[in-house]
Each structure stands twice: as structure tokens, then as C-alpha cells.
Image 1 (tube, helix red, strand yellow):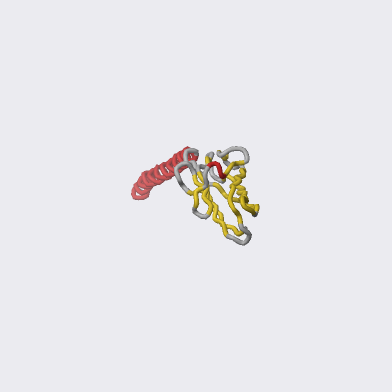
Image 2: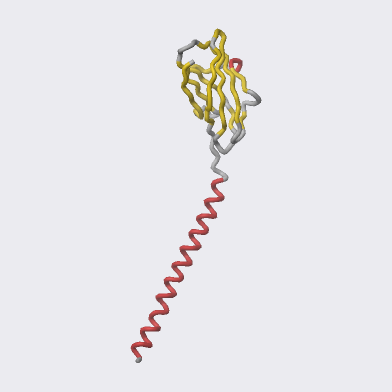
Length: 139
């Protein structure tokens, strides 16, 4: 009978240890989830998605670039390149602003000689000189 009572007492510290470990893991998961939700707001991305490109053939012609900001922060277009050539600010203009809000669409019109059947690579760069959108199409 005494053996049975001793074994019952040994069961209590084991159960207590398992409960402590389970509580520690649960609290750790809750803290990790909370910290993760806090840091997501600080991780801003800039990314423009070029949705379509229209060509107006001629000399001078134009390339109309339709974009959407698919990032989480506003984006300001610093320069645009066509076939690797940087376009002067006088050669392109935006529909409303050079700064595109998150989720917002915008249109950029580039004055450039456009020949039918030629390929054109259009690239958009931010203030840091980082490529954020590119598109290759044939006029």
C-alpha cells in the first residue's frame, strides 16, 4: 500500500512540469504573433506593376504606360528608361502626379519616336535608382 501512495506523489511533479512547459510555449506563441503584427506595419515596399503599354506610332510618337502601385508605401517615379536610354523629365509626364499611392493606378506618357514592329523595353526607377517596374512590348 505504501508503494502505491509513493508512486502517486511522484506523478504530481511530472504533471506540473508538463503544465509549465505547455504554458511557456503558449505564451511564447502569443508574444511572437503580437510582435509579428507590429513589425508588418514597418515593412514598407515600393513596387509598381505595369498593367499595359499603348503605342502611338510616329515621330514624335508616344508610349503610354499604365501602372498600379502594388506595394505598401507611396512611390515616386524618379526616372523612366526606354530601351536603356534615360528619358529627360521634359520627355515624360504623368496623368496626375509622379507619386503613386498604394493600390492607386497612374498613367505616364513618354514622348519618343515609335516605329511599328519595334520592341520597346520600358523601365521605371524610384528615387534611390532602384528598378521597380519593367515591361517589354512590340509596337
